[in-house]
Length: 76
Image (cartoon, rainbow, N blue to C red; front, side, top):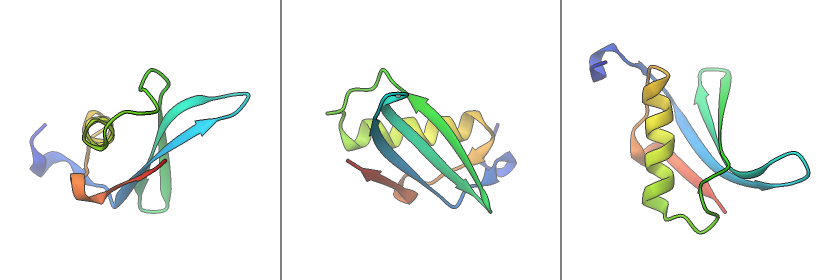
C-alpha cells in the first residue's frame, strides 16, 4: 500500500504491561473513537524508543493505517 491508500491514524501509545494475563509491550492505536491493540510479548522491556516506535508504525501500516512516528508516545 502507498501512503495515499492508507487511512490516517491519530496517535498511538506503547504501553508496558505486566500482570497475570499479559506481560510485554502493547500498542494502543487510536483511529477516531476506536482503539486497536497489538501485543508484542517478545519485545524486551528495555527496548529502545526507536524500536518501539518502529513496531507501532509497522503494526499500523500492516492494518492499513498511516501513523507518523512523531505521533507515538511511549509509557514505560
